[in-house]
Length: 174
Image (cartoon, rainbow, N blue to C red; front, top):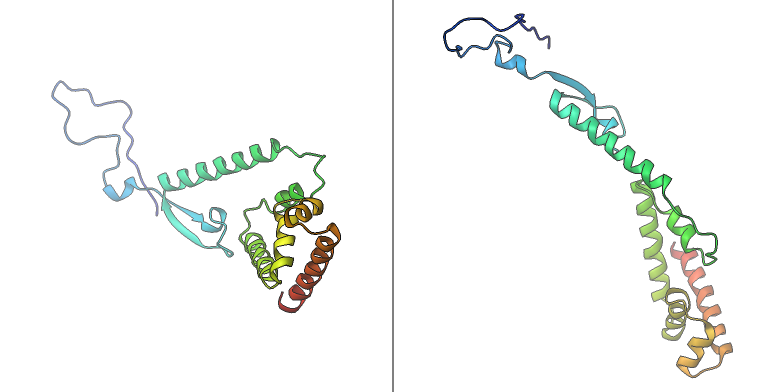
């Protein structure tokens, strides 16, 4: 859409009150809205192919400003991340691995979590509670044995058998 403007240098000089007609604005109301063609794929991550849309100038400016804002926030997050070198339990590595905005990665993480829960729920009661205490609540085998009034060896064997059963379950159904 081609727009044409009428430009008058300076304001009209007269002593009468200004008329309702403004010399600096376009005469046609349709010409006020300048349309810009944008690619929606550049602004929305769920678009996998190019899709062009004609939007007004104000909308295009807001979309570009929003995109700049989000890029700046991502850059700030990357710059100020703190990584600890003294964690040996793997939790920090898991957090870094799963800190993503990619929907497929988030879905895969949720699916893995659900499979682990199903595998844990498929175990007998004692094995399940001992594995839960050990790996979810981070209790030592000695603490679990003292709480249940059993030997550490019994706890160790139950956890070992339970993990083997979970592995077998995940291979079968996962």
